[in-house]
Amino acid sequence: MSEIRDAAMTSKAWPFEEARRVLKRYAKAPPEKGYVLFSTGYGPSGLPHIGTFGEVLRTTMVRRAFEQISDIPTKLICFSDDLDGMRKVPGNVPQQDMLAEHMHKPLTDVPDPFGTHESFGHHNNAMLRRFLDTFGFEYEFYSAREFYRSGQFDDVLRRAAERYDDVMKVMLKSLREERQQTYSIFLPIHPETGRVLYVPMKNVDAVNHTVTFDDEDGREWTLPVTGGNVKLQWKPDFGARWAALGVDFEMYGKEHATNTAIYDRICEILGGKKPEHFSYELFLDDKGQKISKSSGNGISIDEWLSYASTESLSYFMFQKPKTAKRMYFDVIPKAVDEYHQQLRAYVGQDVVQRLNNPVWHIHSGDVPTSNMVVPFSMLLNLASVSAAEDKSQLWGFIQRYAPETNAENNPDMDAAAGFAVRYYNDFVKPGKVYRLATDQEREALQDLRDQLAAWDGPVDDEALQSVVYACGRERFDPLRAWFTALYEVLLGASQGPRFGGFIALYGVQETIALIDAALAGELVKDT
Image 1 (cartoon, rainbow, N blue to C red):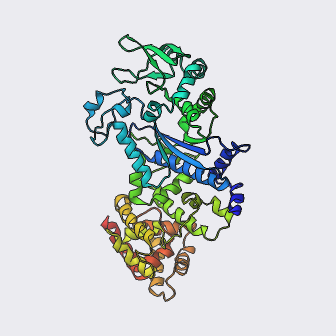
Image 2: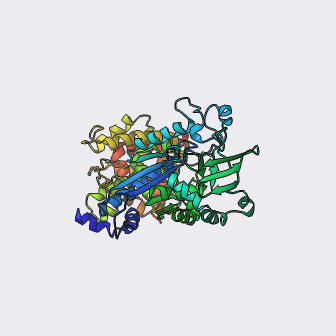
Image 3: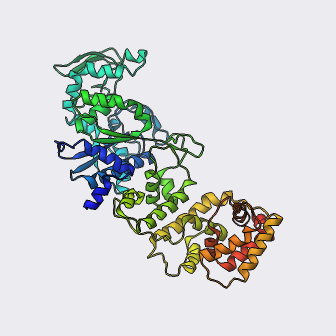
């Protein structure tokens, strides 16, 4: 254990770097609350998405890294801002007209259009919790509705009334002049309509902890700031939540980065210690545009998990969180294969290398063994040439290549075979375009065909790769052009696998037949 802790204290893996920053907060004394608090936030105006997964996953990675370097207990909370007013009706839910009648009410006071929960907010909270539970995250769930209405937030709300002018100074600096005229950190909840009101304050009583305002009809009201009668605007709410809970670490997307100083200062004004924070870059689609729930570009959690494992998605999330990454269907095969490459590398690594390996963080140090005997990219090419409609078609090739392999003992392999067939039929098959070989390429392909027909050596990757190299080395400069020809003429794709390994998996006789079909022009006819 001491060896791991020593290595963790110098590891360059980003979760350990963040964990060490958190540890510095308590270099002199442990936290009075008895634990270190990691926090994530969620707006339940819609269903949880891939960003929610990434935020909780990455925060969990930092939490687990912290637990390697400290004996201080930890907690992770997921905080739902379900007291927020519904500002627009989501387009992907039923009963649009009914929802429109409840505009600006807190989400937990809006009826559930699905008819399954106490409110729309409760429905989306349940979806979030089921979502997090599916992935096995360990967390405590906090509802803003309960947090405000139960009195847990009352002390901080009283301080917000007492230090109203100081908090307002921070906020007003960040607002346009027109907005400054009507802005207040407090949003009253109308006692009759239940709507969250965006109205200026006529008075904030620092002694009695009340606010006085006129509603939209011009009637004057005075309400206590405690007990869920008001909520805070979202920027002050960030800092107030940090102060109320004693948050030590929270990460968020770069769209919040410009507000970090505001959140921190408000937290301090309200009696808290600003947390450590981590701003991550956003995900982009294949065109480099920001992924948006409303536009539907990019890829969703469900879509990724239709074609690959959770671990491959976790691997993708781990990589360079401060770099914007394109997240679309083409990145899936690469993520799957790199994840298993890291699993295989982990076995022979020392403790320093292991702590820098993404799989340590994906599996919190309890790293499994890869049983993927065939790369995912190779399975895709196998599915392509065999026109597979079912994973059982791939297993025939896999078991000939690796006879000791079976679905029961190699569950990752079995799942990957199913994923590969689905991915091939949905993405590869529609884009396959074969071409005829040039005269130079025909000569090389005929040579490869003849050498395979006369082959009596071992049917293994390296030996067959040497044959492929030999057929192209004297004919192509650069040699890369030979492999491009193999992919485009034989596989109908612009890129492909290490070809010797493909032959070993697909079969020597089957590859001869594939070359014959290509030279006869039959593959082009099929498309």
